Image 1: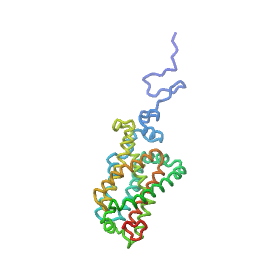
Image 2: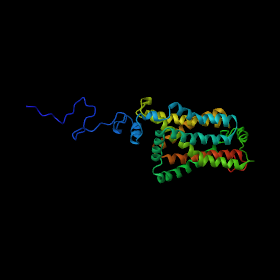
Image 3: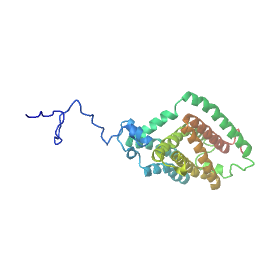
Image 4: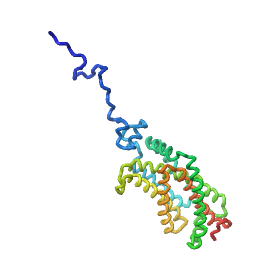
Length: 305
């Protein structure tokens, strides 16, 4: 008697076995692993957003990011310090801080996604941040202006040559509208661009590369390394600016101080207080504008002469 032929086990040599209601589901392809099996936070973000795996390849190459970080210093050295061209320098910095990041984000979608997520995070609780930023910025500006007014004569500030150097950039009491425009630009526009570029854009690109590193054997070494790198590049571009109107030792001292200031702004931003950082940056740049007016204008209320 012939034994019945089983129907539930297709031949192993069959290239296209018939589907069965007892068949197991096909596992996901290795080219698109589920987000829960991703190795790093960066991979989880990319997979959650539906982007292809190996997200580090979707980020700008590190040499490109480093070159972009150096462009501000290069522009200032060539256009501002060498050519004494103030207004072309401001226009070139807009390109470096806004136009180039937009192009890079268009070319690397994961970078754009990371920036959107970070901006959403650090701009949260906007009303609370504004309520914190307003008094802190006002107090910082008042303290800094009072310190300048009290300490400038004993410290011999500003140097005698500063007024003549500023005049070479077109900043003098004979052209007040240029001075006013620069002060408004420094106070209202420049802090917004700088905080976006240094504290959000550049920091996120560095952090995406170095998040898992253990810089100085610290558990958050990648974040520390990214913050120090962004703050160092931020301070570096200011050194030729200050050196153009003040002695080099004073410019180098200002650069060291700006690393610390940039680190403080970066810490605020990492804590989710970008708007507070912008407010404090605005107050600092307002003080710089008032000091410039004090040097350039003979009838300015602070009158350093």
